[in-house]
Amino acid sequence: MSFLPPSFLPFWWKVAGEAESPTRRQGRALGFFLGVCAVAAFYASLYAPSASGEWGWYPRLAKPAWAPSPAFTGPVSTFFYGVLAVSIWRIWRTGAFRNIPITMTGFACLLFLQSIWSTLFYGMQSPLLGLADLVIIFLLAVVLWLTYIPIDRVASYLWLAYLCWILLLLPVNAAIWWLNT
Image (cartoon, rainbow, N blue to C red; front, side):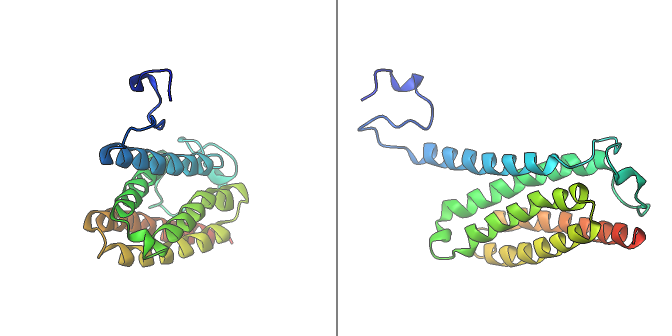
């Protein structure tokens, strides 16, 4: 039993005898997925260049003229971490992860691979490892997108937007590797 009224307790604290509303449960789950993706985004940002691109070895690399600047890719990548969180939350709400385990395990693997890309590319200074990581991310994202289509249309559309972003990054990464070998 709590000594404080329920309005003073944190949102995750359940008062004995109080039934949890579905809306509250959904909100906690969305917060959880947003938090997990925020941690992954924070880790990915540790090795990323600054918005001006003046960090580490990246400015010295030969890049194609059509390569987006770090001032563009940073905010867009952060946005897509949020997109990933909302899409997996929508899949979680359906309960499909109980029957189709790749929905959650695939998402966890993809999030891990997405977050270590900057470590491989910028931290290890290896466009080749970054490219290999992006190819695996793309293949896994396609499998997950095809899995999400029959489960939740909105989640699959969000995933498709993420796939388009990866399709932009793949040739940029490949060109940087090619120009600097």
